[in-house]
Amino acid sequence: MLALERRNLILEKLQEEKRVVVSELSQLYNVSEETIRRDLDKLDRDGLATKSYGGAVIKENTNIDLPFNVRKKRNVSGKQKIAELVSDLIQDGEHIILDASTTAVFIAKAIKEKENLTVVTNSIEIIIELSDVSDWNIISSGGSLKEGYLALVGQRAIEGLGAFNVEKAIMSCKGIDAVKGITDGNEQFSEAKRVLLKSGKKSILAVDSSKFDKIAFSKVCDLRDVDIIVTDQRPSEKWMNLFEENNVKCIYPEEPS
Image (cartoon, rainbow, N blue to C red; front, side):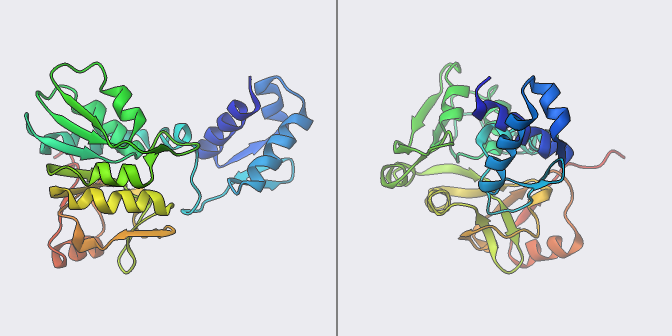
């Protein structure tokens, strides 16, 4: 097993359990405790974890960009619920844009039974996910591959995302705050999302409940700039009132009666 692969597995474990122990990791991955300590040193230096006595704890920070494969495994059930709700908003024959978020990958999986869609995206993973769907038009934004991500960024990506007019523009984010609005952890991603939103007749923010009341590094837009927010559970009354004030429709799973 490569060191990078092992560190990503340790990160996944940290996401699930919030804390890891050197001796347990050593046995789990069949390497020495010293090797595990070096892995934890690296994660600590990268700001992804905080070393503690005998192990490490997860570092909760909205400005840290975790590897794509780690983020993809966070709150899977919530993202699946969101994807199903977003799928209901998309009609056969429509043109849509999906951003390069992990939530958008779940949405791509959920809409594969639709017919004759045109999908524009800067996500390599979405392009791969939809590569076996018949009678669809899959359009890459173009751009440069962002190191550590399956996303296309840069000026060519911006131009590609802004070159089309679609019925639905769909994105996610790392934070949504009553004052700071909708934010992401990286300016390149935020810029892409801003352009993406302007390309859609309807703009949809697909965001799980863990992102509410969080602020990430780079502002994408104000709350009023999106038309619909789709989330995995009913937001608080404070948020429902904010949505109403900003003319934003909020969609969430209905509780069983």
